[in-house]
Length: 222
Length: 222
Image 1 (cartoon, rainbow over the protein chains, first blue to last red):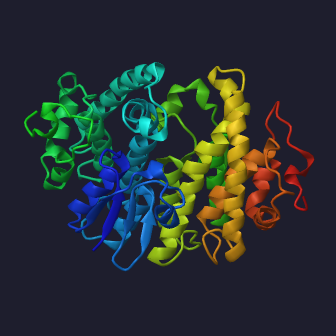
Image 2: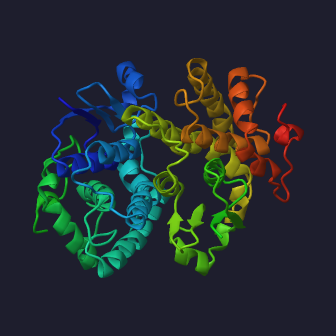
Image 3: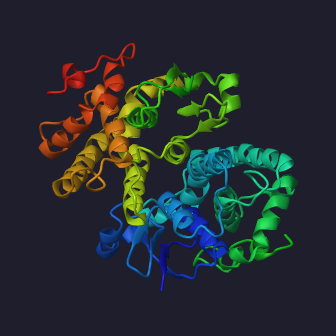
């Protein structure tokens, strides 16, 4: 059986879970507590990070970017990357936006500080990081709103990897109650559409010990 | 004429310059002082970062990952990504290794602290960051040595984007004198081979005001 090493609240793992579900690829999830630096795991990914996809053939694909491009090349029937060169540029530009810029400016400051940090031996969230995270998420939600005002999905008329990258980060932040949906109705409308897709169900069933999500986390009518 | 917005010491811009030169694509370089946040530049890349490639058709491609994938799709004759799915996984895994992990653990701690930081309004390099950078580069050089021990190029028998990603970061660090080549003969041998390629010449001619590279920086027999 195809296997994905992941962490439930890791946005990069969540993106891969969504994309594989959209492509109707069956897989098993294996939780990898990366901070323990398990030698068997480091042997398959020296970078020591999730997600890592292992195909039934044994082919091992570490890194969320490498996995996304691999899935698109190996399973092109349901394309999530756009058709023309220009469409593909926009999908990848926005995927990088969320996995690089949003991740650095928002996810790291909020999700990492509040949850993952303690596993790496640091206890208290840094107050300055939290302040920056809360400030930055406003700007980013405005940018998403701006995109959805003129487009059906974030990168254009078609649902793409860019939507799943964005939704993966936001869903993890939503789990810790850090997305103010009511102040961002356009973003909420886009997120409601993606949240109600069958591919999203597995994410909404995630529960992490010690962190209780807000009641509306799994609610499709939030 | 095709144009690349860049910064001379930006490793991500350097990688694109190398790849375009390998693909024999002519282009003009336009230095973009991103910290000035020029409105015309933000209009073409809201992320405000280099590199950004603008084709003669007007097609604008921001982000080094999006540019690399675009160049491979638009100009496939000289492929730098590998042929089989497994080869492409390895090329992309290592490209992400350098552009993500190496960048965070080494480049940011040394190059950003010593050069770029002051343009963003922070004056002094952080001593702890420098210490971590110097410690981390040792581990990373060992990893490169390990790869070259069993392979002609970093990702296998063929020169690939992974080599250019690694060489782009190392060349920028070499400009500020932070690579100890003599302690890493295997890495030096690999770097000497890539440094002597015609695609590398433009990088070796870069000079940045206020930062003088060591004498061996442009020397092919260093």
